[in-house]
Length: 297
Image 1 (spheres, rainbow, N blue to C red):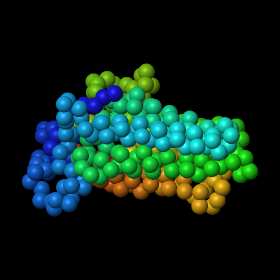
Image 2: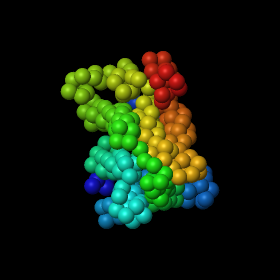
Image 3: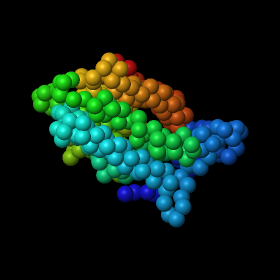
Image 4: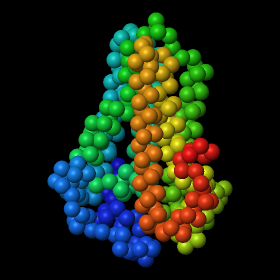
């Protein structure tokens, strides 16, 4: 697995060079920003600390992903013990989708080096706690409603399982497609097309802002895919949870993503506006008016 990534000093400097920035005065050295020790402890001060050649940030993401998968498997084992070795369609569907989520994330790790989490967050308590606690224990919240589910509470049909998988895959196609398109452009900007020549790599003139393919549908269309995947993972528990509380519990996962991505989109748009300037960014927002969900917002 990849554990290395070149760092930088400041949020804007990490995703733009001086010659691309319309106003170079917006770049500030993080060390000059006056923050309390509590804020520094929580948000971090160093971008990518390395020890013995290992990037600690990437290591934490790796450990979090492994812990997440182990928690999911623990839920499955407990479910099997309670149900005398029989697994419900609901927990099988949930496990297959989430296992693919983790496996694909680790296998395509290089692509994620170009996403927000890796280039825009410093190594602090927030990131460490998120990777080692929140990520592995909150993300599988949908499984907690399925563990104690016995035959008396019913199950979902095979056809419904396939529908849920279909919803999950559609979200994955949106997220992975958008990230792969951006990755292809960032690593090979001279390439004019993407996906076997089917999608032109069109940008706003004079910038690196993609405005075709997935990035021409919405400015953060990949966030829609993440939310759709989270919604799909909440459906098994929502449908057959033993109690009202256990049916509502899985919905916290997509709700969390909505809250996270709405605020992140606003922050990212501000960064891009300062990076490319008002003229170029306004041109882009006119071409791609929707922020996350096409036709809605």
